[in-house]
Image (tube, rainbow over all chains, first blue to last red; front, side, top):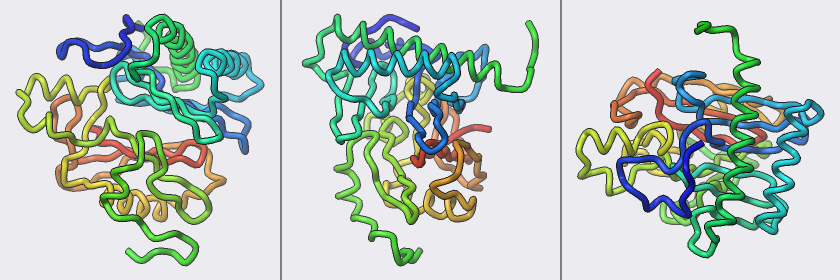
Amino acid sequence: MGELFPNSQGRDDEHLAEPPIVDALQLDRSHNTWVVTLIPEDLVSTREKELVTIPLTSPDGRRITLRVRRLSLLLGMNISGLFHGGDGDFVFVSEAGERRTLAQPQMQIDLSIRVYVELSDIAMTAQIAFACQAPAATVP
Amino acid sequence: MNEPADEPLLPAEEALRRVPDGGVLHTLHGGLMIVRRLKHEWNEQLDSMSPAALARHTDKVRGSKFLASWTLTAYVNWTRQQVERLDWDSSTTAGAETVEIGSDVGYSSGRMVQKVRIVISSRCIHAYPVPE
């Protein structure tokens, strides 16, 4: 993913984040899956978003669980979901209803970068899972 | 559209506008939640943009945008109708459907589009304009 800045007030003609990007991440307890909508790279899909479900007990599911735990530690909240707010902005929510935004000014840039590293890995994990689950398309 | 008996009344547009990004706009019968996604909403800055700038601000990274006529009230009502039509409930697994509207609904990468994709994931529902 691209370079991280603490908010989306950068240049108008460039993105602060590049696909793959997590559009939304939610834990589906009733189906024991992570549900990820992701903004894929064009080489994977030209659609704006793709949806992938990842069983919690699968290697990818465990990887995402670990990344979410790391995000929870970094942000000091028990994260139950997150949403992409456009470009480099993200909203994290806890089961208790607490909210935190990646673009908020009080978030230090080093913390933002560490958060973004976790998000980047979740996005790539989900994108690869999507590519593996999707019907075979063109082979380069 | 009438409210189902076990569904709360939809708040006024002004109240819906106070819901934060990712927050719940409306809870449907059975517990499905229509969530707000600000990145797909029109904003005044878009009114005066050049075509090139509009294309950048409505791309997949910044999010396609519903036209201003798609108020949050309209968005919730339309989404609620689609959920009913698709027979989605709290046991529905994650999935998505594309709906042809038949009139302009918004911009995607600078192109006016007439389709909306509606997504259900872990009891949360949102929708956004798509070209295909």
